[in-house]
Image (cartoon, rainbow, N blue to C red; front, side):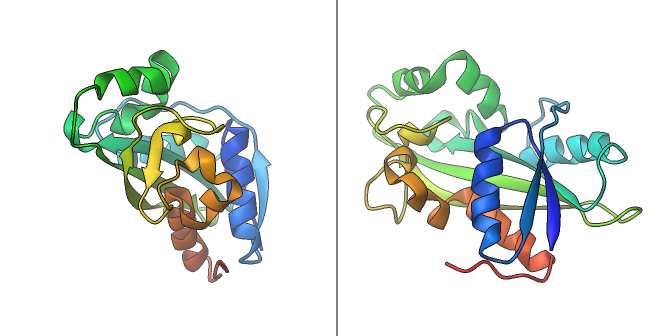
Length: 187
């Protein structure tokens, strides 16, 4: 089976291709920037973007948006994660967390799927609980150097290398996608 992944983020495209390959799903990366509205939920962002992409990209295709939700910051940056990363980055989040003992956080991924022409779009999501590191650790993209997932042995996503793809929020969302497509991702 072959499906298009519409994203301008090469890192996301690589991760999705690696994860879905084990389920027999070939990912074709469609490098296309599309509008991402600022909204209160990732589901709203994905739904809006799906509508914009529909008719511009041949089906089947999917898009994905993710966010890091920090408990002590009332879920911030959440759906604004991309903007926050571009403006204050990992160091800005670390500064916001100075002196904060509750470092619990969650990374959440939402996928929007259009399986066929004229078919209704579907939105699905999954997350991974974890915590914010005291300082950036490892080499990675986005918030990976400051997010320590549960079940990751105390390592940040960035320190895990390819092992991240075995436990990440994106993997969990892609497992839902694979299931919807009648495939199963192998560990």
